[in-house]
Image (tube, rainbow, N blue to C red):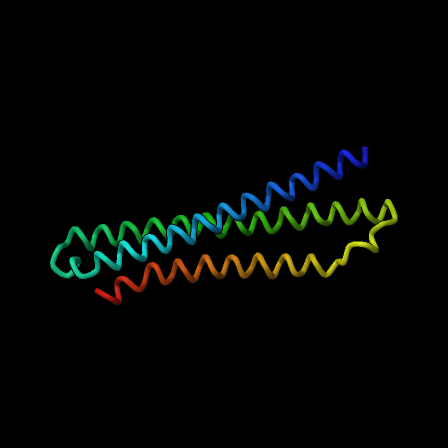
Length: 134
């Protein structure tokens, strides 16, 4: 039964990683695409009101997507921590906990914080730069 639980927890960790990758890539690609589109529209927005409105709509889109991604990554961080704590409890019960360095948990938290910062900063840049160019 322990092996079954171990497989289940590790598969949950793998699924968590895949979901986080999708969140991160989606946010960064959308931020960069919006940056390019809005930067291209910046000059037209000086004379055309509709271009300015479209730019604001895209900014609203990246704000909403980035909020969803940040919350998703924070939940992913919590999920990973709970799953790894469960694994550590299982390893302690089985007497093999000495083979897993607990400092990895802190490293995972730092990595999640860095991913969140990248998403936030690309989103901020994607929102601000086109209006500066305007």
